[in-house]
Every structure is written in C-alpha cells, then in structure tokens.
Image (cartoon, rainbow, N blue to C red; front, top):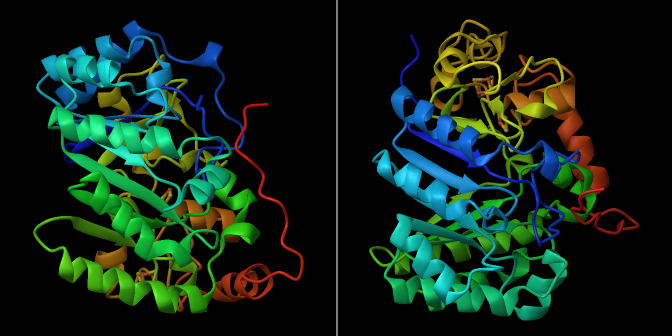
Length: 359
Ligand code: SF4
Ligand code: FES
C-alpha cells in the first residue's frame, strides 16, 4: 500500500487576472461553470485529511477569485491542516488578508514575475507589480510567513540579482527561483522562454552567492533549467509519492501537469474517493516504484535519486511516458532535447509570447 501523501494541491480555479506565458496550467483551461462547488471542495479536503495529508495548498489560477475562499480556508484549518495560499497578490487588500488569516491561512506564497515594474507587468500581461509590493507588506504586517516565487526564463534571468534583492525587501523567509518547466502554456512559449547557456552561467553563481550570504535569513531554493543538464530532475520525488493535485473540475492528478499524458486515464472526485484513487487507480499506480521502468533507467544506479526524471516530459518529447526523461544524457532521445536547444534557445526570429488566456 502506498504511503500517505504529505499534501494536497487544490487548484480551486484556473481563472486568473494574470496572463503569464510561462504558466504550466493546461492550454485548455477549466472554465468557471465546470469548477467544483464549495461542498465538493470541503469533501475533497475531508478525504485528503483522512488519507493523511497535512498540508493544503490553495492554488489556481488565482484562488482569490473564489468567493468561498474564507469558508474553504476555515474548513482546511478545522481539519488541522497547514494552509498555504498561493497567489498573484492581485485582489489581496489588507482587509482581505486579515480576514483570510483570521480564518486560518498559515502561509502565503506570492508570485513575482520580475524585479522591475516594467518587466513584471510585461510578463504578467497586466499592471500587477504595485499590487504585489503592497500585498507583501500586508502579509509581513500580519506576521504571516512569506515565500516569493519567481519562475525564471530568458526574459527575466538577467535580472536575477534584482529579483533576489526584491524578495529580501519584501521580507520573504523563502525565495523559490524556479526555472520554467515546459508544460501547458510554457511548452507553447518554449522558444521565447528557454534560457541561454550564457545566461545560466552568469545566474548560477549569483544564486549560489546569495544562498550563502542569506543563510539563516532567507532560504533560496533554486530549481534547475533541466534541458541544459545531463541528468533530469527528480520530478515530484517520484510518481504518486508525496502529493496529489485536484484540478478545478475535480480531476485527480499524480502531478499538476499530468493531463499532458493523454494515454493516462484520469479519475475524478465526483466519481471516486481520494482514498480509492490514491491507492488503487491505474493513473496513480502507473509509475510508482521501479517496476515500470525500461532501460537505461531500470539498470541505472541513479534511479533512486531521480526516479527516471519526469513522466510528463518523457511523454511530451518521446510519446511514451515510461521512457527515460530525454533530458538524461543516457536517454536514446537526448538528441531531441539538443535539437530543441539548438533551434529554440536563440531562434533567428523570436515569436511573440502567447499570453495565458481562457478562450
Ligand atoms: Fe536517471 Fe534513468 Fe538517466 Fe539513470 S538513465 S540517470 S535513472 S533518467
Ligand atoms: Fe508530471 Fe514531471 S511534471 S511527472
């Protein structure tokens, strides 16, 4: 029997005031009329808690767009869960934050697109920078722990020092600098987003120096640009191991991007319990453990470190989710990634960013 998940990622809605082209949400976003209602989310939280989850991440899209957010926070809190609000900060007034904190929000993760107003608002597609600065001040004044999350790519990587300084100024306890993962909208925009080797060579030591300088004050988590690496990331720390995601329409996903694997039969909370899905569904069991692996992963000593990389990436780039992640230098498909780097990293003509929009 699989061990209990640590946490539930509850994607309350795909609606969002921002239009970031690096978003890993699916290109086909779930519309408002297909979202789970309040009662269904309460049931999902109950089931996640009885499954063993202790953290509930309220995410999206923008969870502040759900009018029932205070009620959902209260319910998650009443179950004894640690409640993390993942937000763009747009729509977070001082009163709203105070109210959410009184209902039981324990932590806020605030996105920041870039270090400057111009850069941030260009990437977000709307004027959001000032709202974020204000939101950070409200969070700090309320005494809630703050994580700032910046997704890195070719458009903002040169400003990494400014992004770190901005997070310090905002009073963040934690800064996540996550190189873009290419799923959903980000995959569509890969040729605009892929960083160059030169950019990474400059950014990496800046991050390392800041990690050292800020040790004990602000933790900096740096997620690598995996296309440029010889080994893949240990995606999700293994399939169906630590976390489960419930999409706005109730689909239950072993990883937030799992809808890209079109061969995977996705279950829904409207038809089955989280307990049943976590333990017994074909989707959650498809890549658990090591039995499903083919060579070179099957006979590779690194399989216990990286679990063969990312199933979604393997599917997207090779057509079979059970293949070795083609980022790996041992993968027979590594040349696919090399070709992408060659052609898309510095394309002769840079395409326009497709902004994330519900159509
Ligand atoms: Fe990881 Fe598989 Fe590559 Fe080995 S062969 S390093 S397990 S992805
Ligand atoms: Fe789905 Fe890596 S993003 S397994």
